[in-house]
Length: 366
View 1 (cartoon, rainbow, N blue to C red):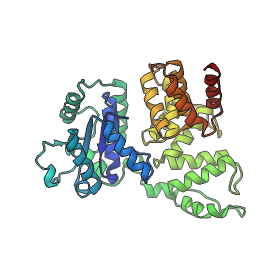
View 2: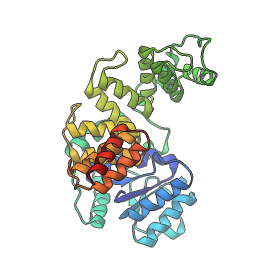
View 3: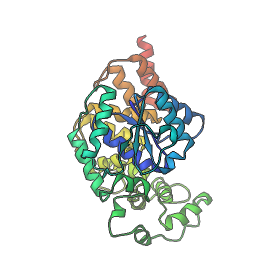
View 4: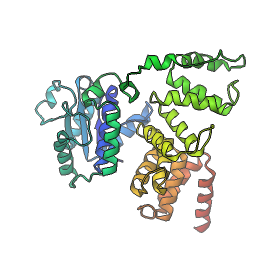
C-alpha cells in the first residue's frame, strides 16, 4: 500500500503516471490505478488504497470535474482529512471543492527538476512528516526521458493526444507504419489470427505484439521464426506497447531471437514497460537492481519496491523472489516467515515449482 493515492480521470493517466514517477524520485511512494481490472476487485482495491494512504492527491481537469468517480474520491479525501488538490488544467472546480487552496500545476513543464514542484513537495513532506529525499540518478533519468518526449508541459502531455518519444521526431506514426512489410498470410494461419494479421499490416501495436508472440513460439499456424518475432516486437515497442517492450527486453537480456546479449538495452526496455505497469518487466528490473546488472546500481530498496508492485499484480516470479527475501531477511526486509509463506503460496498456486519447494521446506522445519 502506498502513502500517496492519486485520483484522476482515466483519460489523464499519462499525467498520473508521470507525476507518480516524479514523486517516487523524491522518495514518496505514490499509487494510481494502473493494471487493475474492472469489477468488484477494482473497487475493493481502490477503497483499500485510499484507506491506507496518508495523502489523496486529486488531479483536477475539466473531465475530472464532471466525473462522479473522481468527485466521490475527492469527497472521501476531504472527509478523512487527506485531500490535496492540484489543477492540471485551468478549469472551475465543483462548488463543494472550489474554496479549498489548490496547487496550480498547469504551468509545470513536466521536468522532475522544477521550481513549480516546490509547493507540492513541501505540502506532501509536511503531511508525511519527512523531507523529500531526491534520488539524483532517478531524477536525471526521468529528466532525460521527459526531454525525449520533447519536454512538453504536463497539461500538453496529459490533455492532448498521447505523446511518445518517437512522435516528437519528424517521422510521423503514419510514415512509420507505411514501411511495414508483410507477406500474404500463410494458408495455415489460425482463424483467430486473421484479423490480427490484417491489423498488424497497418501497424496496430497490439496485433504486432500478438503476431510476434506466435512467430516466437511457432503457434497459430505460423512457423517458429524468432528473427521475424524480434522485428515485429520492435515495431510494437517503438509505439510504446509495454508487453512488446518487456518481451524484447527479455530477448536482449538472454541473447535470444538472434539479438546480441545486451543487459543495458534490456534494462532500458524493462524500465519503459515497468513504468507503464507491466508486472513481468517490474520483476525482471527488480532482479537487475538487486544484483546491480544492466548498468544499474545495486539498489535493494528499488528492487523491493518493484518486486512488491509486480507481486501485487500477480506475477509469480516476483512473489517467489520477494517471499525468499522475507524468509531470509535480505535486501533491507525484516525476516517474516509468515509473509514468505503467503507469497510462496500465491506463486505455488500459479504453478511455480520453486515456491512449492520452499513451502515444503518450511513445513518440514515446522
